[in-house]
Image 1 (cartoon, rainbow, N blue to C red):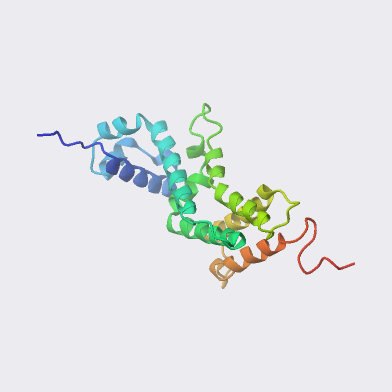
Image 2: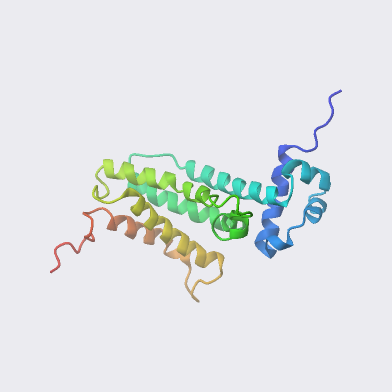
Length: 211
């Protein structure tokens, strides 16, 4: 009879999600492999077997957060309306962040997880790579005549990403102004921004003929 494998992928993912919650609530200093093992009802041996040490756990945590986020964005399939795809990607961005604030914070807020050691200074680049579907949508929009062909597609994508990130950060930090909700303006804000890139660089749609 085959021996039951206990250190499997399900356990690895369970440990990662519990570790993410701990880091989000109390920071990396509060992350103890022994406490994590007890919380997940497994042994410290299992944790060490799967991740090696705390640095390995943090590295895996970052990689898993990036993988899940990239997979969610990639689920938005390209259509014949690239400008609309840009907005749809922005909506998924907010949905993912609100549903998974601990994983989102690990990608874009917690530097101690992004770079747990000086030997891996380039790791935050992985988070940046998750916006490639956005850049691709902008490029398709330029080819379809929806966006200014003179503009750098990465600059357009960055402006959309920055707007999405800023508004999402207000939600996650609890800093929405009293009586106002980001959810009420988020899609419209993205739509206005996308519309602004639909004309020649340096001109804003509707104001091109102003003196």
